[in-house]
Structures are given as structure tokens and as C-alpha cells.
Amino acid sequence: MSIASLKKGFHVLPNNVKGGIILMFAAAGFGTMVALIKLVGERLDVFQILLLRQAVMALIVAPTIMKNFPGSLQTNNIGLQLLRIFLALVAMGFGFTAVVNMPLADATAIGFAKSFFVTICAIFFLNEVIGIRRWFAVIIGFIGVLIVLRPGFDGFTIYGVYALIGSAGAGAVMVVIRILTRTESTTTILTYQALGVGLAVAIPGLWFWLWPTPLEWALLVAMGVISYVAQMFNINAYKYGEASVMASLDYVRLIYAVFFGWLLFNNFPDFWTWFGAMIIISASIYTIHRENQKKQKIVTSAKSKIQD
Image 1 (cartoon, rainbow, N blue to C red):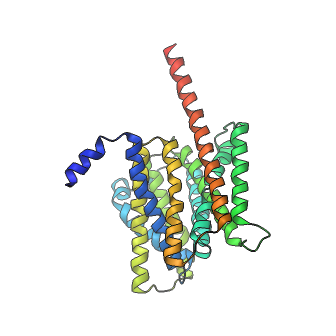
Image 2 (cartoon, helix red, strand yellow):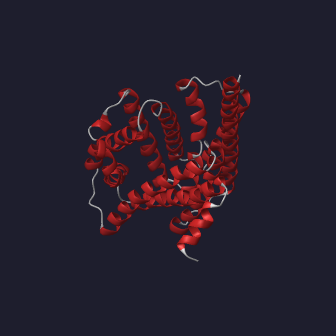
Image 3 (tube, helix red, strand yellow):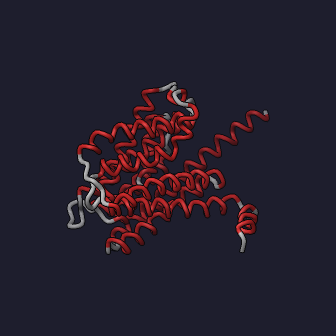
């Protein structure tokens, strides 16, 4: 079958199916990325990994940034840009440390809690009113997190808390980006992300520097490229598919985490990890579903007012 016929077949598919197919590639990319982080993290420091990953990604997006530079640094809200950089550092620093030091499936499952933190942060940053059913879903979701963490039991590790802090940072980043997109261009947001995070991790990254082996260099470059490609797949998936449907499918990342954990590190999640993960995923999907319903009601109400 030719590439042209594959393209033609793809374009006649329903939009949610198109988005779902693209999202599978994004999930595979993100799953590969965290596996590479864990591999190189066996010897290299997390800050060095962050620095080199950021450097590779900055080189990839450099043409876009330089096209409008230094105009791309002009911002209407430098405070929020700096907050976004700080939260991204929290998300990646704690999240990467968790990935390096605990089973991939456990770290990935706890990372799904970011949707609950999006709901909580939306109250403070966006002044959203959260209904009882969404609060109930958030509480149930955190019960699932506790099952995976198992505080007070033999399976507990402090790195599980790191994973939770990382997911909180990721959730807060998503809310801050929502606010920034109201007044900032995509190029400006991308520029501050690329330069700000890179500069922030430069000093600790160089302080803890260990010269990578040829294999580690290859893995680090691959990590940066795959991170960028996965993000592009993710963005395009949401262009085609409905946000609520795509967000629900995104949990396939857990399958990749289990696969790579088993293949590369001989780790396979136990019953409690699976049980907690299913609770987290179910509560997250419900939270996303309720948020989508709320948005649809707002859009419908706005259209009816226009018609009146």
C-alpha cells in the first residue's frame, strides 16, 4: 500500500479517530522518553539530563524563535511567564527524579493526578466554580494516588511523593498556559519556555556534570528529539479530536510505561499499582468529562443569547 493511499484513507476517517491514531504515536513517544530518562538517569544527574534535553529541544525550535527574535520576548505578563517557568521546573525536576528512582508504571500512574490539580488550580487562577460531583471525583482520584503510594506500608517510597509534586506542577502549568494564551502568542510562550527553563537548569546541570558516554549522548539526543516529536503529535491530535476524548485516550501511556518497565528494567506493577491506577484514570476521565460538559453548556448559552 502506497503512502498516498494511506494519506487518502486517513483523511476520510472521523476526526476523533484521526486524533486517536495520532495520539497513540504521541503516547508512544512520551513512553519512550520517560524510559530514556530512566536509562540515562542511572548514572547522570537529573539536572544534567534536563539541561541537555532542553538544549536539544531549543535547537529544534530555534528557527521559530529566531524568526521574530527579540520581538518574541515581548510579553504582556512577565510575572506569569516566570511563574510558568518555575512550575515547569517543579514538574520536570520532581517528575524526572521520580521516573529515575521508581518503577515507570508507578511514576506514570501518579503523574495522571495532574488533571485533579488542574481542577484545584482553576479555582484559584481562573475563579472557576467546582461542583460537588467534580470535587467527589478529585477526592476519589487522590484515594487512588494513596493506593499507589501506600504510605506506611513496605511499598512506600519518597519518590512517589516526588511524582505527586511533579504532577501538581504539571497541572498548574496547564492552567497558567490557559491564562497566557489569552494575551500572549504561541511563539512568545515557546520562547520563554525554551530559554527560561534552559537558563534555570544551566548552573545545576553544569555543577553536577558527568561527561556522557557515546551511548548516553545518543540516548540524550534521541530523548530531546522524541520529546519534541511527541509534543507535536500531541498538539495535532487535539487539533483533530475532541479534547475530552483525546484526554481520555491519553492514559494509554500507562501501557507503554508497563511495557518499557518490564522490557528494560524487569519491573512489573503489582495488584495495588493496577488498582490505584484504574481509580486515578477513572476519576480523571470523569473530571475531564464534567469539564467538557460545562464548556459545552457555556458555548450553548452564548449561542442562544446571540440568537436572541
